[in-house]
Length: 231
Image 1 (cartoon, helix red, strand yellow):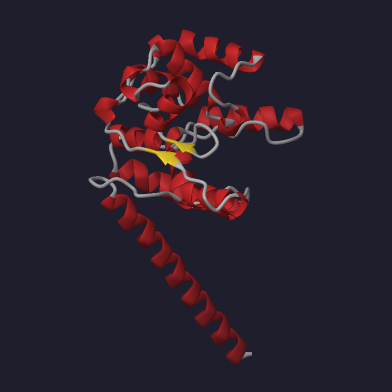
Image 2: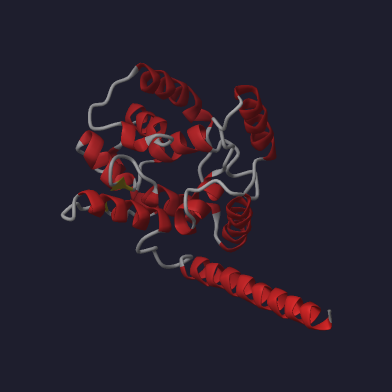
């Protein structure tokens, strides 16, 4: 019995040490990215691997743009569409999470996540897309780290440069050129609202895409943009 108990304690200790090391690894990366741009993310790496499986010659589109060089229209559109309380919360929109839970319960399946921009960035930077309790718990821990170490401006800057906006298209600059043939600095309100409307299903839309849902969602975001406050 003592041998089993001792073995259990050692195993638990090793697991805790490993967990602490993993959290420290996340912390160091986030701290480094305060002043340095991420070269890639877990999500981008996964997409690159899947694309290369289909076509070894495929290339991702991405070009980092500093915060000041991205149109304020796009910043407002993204906040209006994805996280209206971005500047007010500390990583989690509890009211939004409650509404998403009620909506999912009513539909009988997951149709809404209620994730903030910070939570989405945490997942994009480090985690897989699987829906498990431990992944959500790790996402929450990383979100707290992001909100503690980074400014809202830096969180939004990284987010705008790493999210997907088309099949293998990542970041605002690549998205603006792919969909509209212009720089992210020159995106107008309607174009910004349309890009924001694509975020939940980015690979569904190519250049010149027009669907009833996309049009309706674009109009809703456009109407909300003036009330969106950006960092």
